[in-house]
Image (cartoon, rainbow, N blue to C red):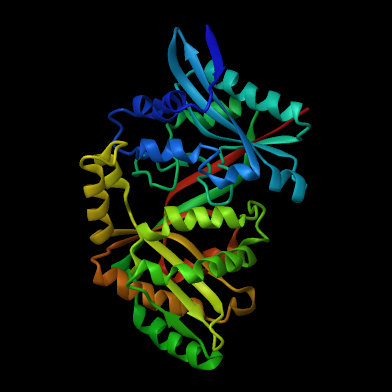
Length: 374
């Protein structure tokens, strides 16, 4: 018999929710665990400002008293009320290979969606545009990433057999740094800076980045607002992001381009891959997890493209070449050999244009799935 229980937000209960994948993916060399206490804190309404505009329910599935699945059911009110997108989200979805368990968990998503007069379900997705997205459908033999979900191949089949259809498709790609001919980008960057009176900003100290972060997110919204997956980010969420992530990214991997009035016109953030370090940490910062993470931050042969954006007024004018030149120099200096492009919508032609000359190899595909609520 399958029993679905909604759990409370007390730490003991949330720890069961967060640690279920540690059992499900035990000995799987591709799964990357989160830091347990960090994940629990992200679900705490008193600590994560996303809950000012969202509500979540957390469910565990039990079979013969053993936890066999989990799901978070999310309503983002900015999306539902301000954007008039009548969608209920589900994320942090993990399950054993048992269709009945999946059905029981997804029924809870459906019930809450119907109760709140919403029109359809989409998932797996997180709370906002800054969260993880999608079920992995190809690339199961590739290591996961800190900012993506990993799952077994049967997840896609479970969702389809429960009536879900593909809603959005994403690709993840790999670029070999040695294949990049930076000389032509360096020449082009020089011309673009002269033509538009632009200059790059480089950093060696995270504190000097902070004054620009709010402006960066304004630009981020301008650049991505037209995408179907985009949901605006509150000022509180931006402050949370700054506190949680900026100080942990190597400042050399954050690049800005400004105009003659010091207004931000483009930005790029890449970060070292913490995947192997997180596997060694196995969910705990102490006593040794923090050592592995700090080591990965300083020296790493793999970097991840996290965020990139160009003011619409400067798109298709070559400004991206300035960012490429600066990033290339920093990556090579720090021993980088591989650049991983995190999930990009398949139909986002503008972002694919940015990278096409670097011959990206698609290594993973993932999708969100949809079910209409009748």
